[in-house]
Length: 102
Image 1: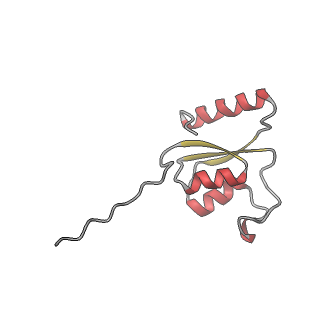
Image 2: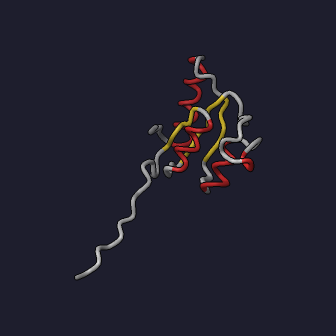
Image 3: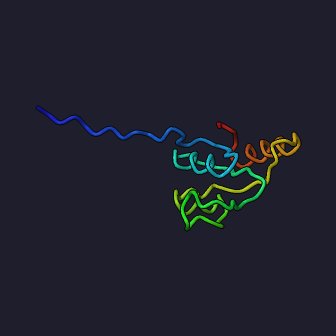
């Protein structure tokens, strides 16, 4: 009897262009294989160490580049309560990534 071939499971966001509103979401998108992660938050650096001591004080986009090898991760300061900033966010993501998937 032959052995079944190993099936490689594709990450859920492989090749997708994403916006992570906050550090946790941006890291989750990167861990799921997103091709582009735009880190949208008020500040590039969070105070918490919930993602490991080595990540404390490091901007989210740099953590993504270090952990996941995603070279297309960048920070864009965004206050989601201000419509003009959200519009700018979407325009910048489409300009860089060609589209916005998530």
